[in-house]
Amino acid sequence: MVTSSQHTPFENWTKTQSELLGTVELDVDWSVPVEDMRQELRRALEGVELWDGRVCVLQVTDAVNSFVRVRALVSAPDAGRLWDLRCLVREHLVDWLRRREPGALPQVRVRALAQVADHAGQPNRGEHDSDARVFGESVDGEERVKAFGGTGAAKAGSAGDGQV
Image: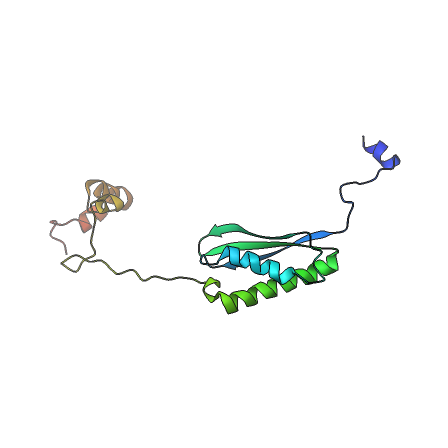
């Protein structure tokens, strides 16, 4: 009941310590050596006064499209040190990637596809192409021309009607 909680003192036991966890996320290339990066995070934190020694985790949290997202989870005794620690970790991992694993930096790959043409120089049309067209070159397509364009549209575009 709301009124009883306003008049009855209580103690919140959900957070008894001030230590905090913070994350650093980086989008990197699929070629990133995750285990090497995990070890580098550990090396970066060892001996740093900002880190309280409790949590040092590196995980791949997403892998879609062109990038893999890695998340470093670290701990510090208070909010001020956590902010500085997160900045230090981010800078260290970016520097490590640039120096030791430049291929793992974010990349956008573009591959040119060769244009396929048949012997007549026209685009190669597979068997499904007649069904892929909305208008023309099939009985259904001609019917759609009539339905959407009126009877004059079908006559104007049909072969053999003598019009050019």
